[in-house]
Image 1 (cartoon, rainbow, N blue to C red):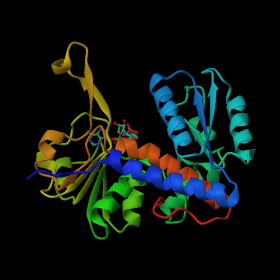
Image 2 (image 1 turned 90 degrees about the horizontal axis):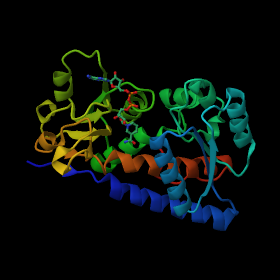
Image 3 (image 1 turned 90 degrees about the vertical axis):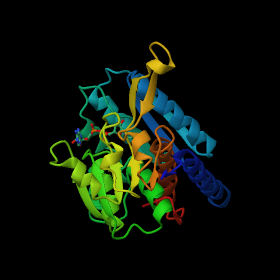
Image 4 (image 1 turned 180 degrees about the horizontal axis):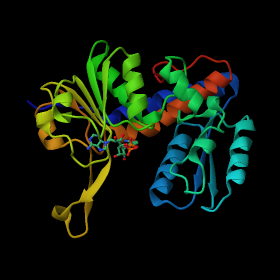
Length: 300
Ligand code: NAD
């Protein structure tokens, strides 16, 4: 048996289309242009690539993009002042501070200084609490993208056994909350979990968010289970030539695809969904801020 491939690239394109339609309506009917501000501190090459891509896609769906680049040695007070100015700016509906920040900056302090209504990454402690208590919140983009893929595949997730491997604040924990919200029976596995293969074998849904290349082999997967591979790992690829690399997930795709019912590839699975969900969160934040109807199907 070979699994259905869950095409995150194609799905992300349909989400961007939905966002663009809603943005056009906000402009035409209410003269409002949703705006996303991205703050980038320092020169981290991966962060620069992400921020460029976010800015490009923001403009492509018709929203305003505001980029604020600051030197790596910016003081905490100056960064807090920048966030405050964005909180106060009515043209900005979403604020994203690109992580990681340089070591001298307190990440929690900076994230919790963002107006929760503009916190399109969903990392503010208020949004974490709202999600945990099943209330309307801003939902972290990567788990939201995973949830959308799962809902699209299954329709209802009610009663499914789900195992999330990884307990980070960015992916694992909010993913588990979202699955619980959709009435799954959820297990969170992590580096201290005993008998991980057996735990994973029980699952109808496996979400792998670990950061270890191809850690989950096909023989851990229950036949027919749906596998969402969040991991993005760069490994050597001597077969492509000297010094070449390639991206792989946390799941060994080659063996898992033979057992699973459906699986996300890496690249082209969860990755593209993350930025699409950031755009979705921004248009949702803008609609809420203006007391207008939220776009359907773009929130949890
Ligand atoms: P993290 O390092 O913060 O957390 C990793 C988690 O994995 C930890 O909770 C840890 O307990 C668990 N873990 C570590 N070793 C384990 C083991 N041997 N067995 C079981 N659990 C183990 O990472 P993160 O930020 O959650 O990211 C996880 C992966 O997802 C990374 O590869 C990252 O690049 C990727 N990621 C992708 C996207 C995307 O857009 N697709 C977004 C965020 C993160």
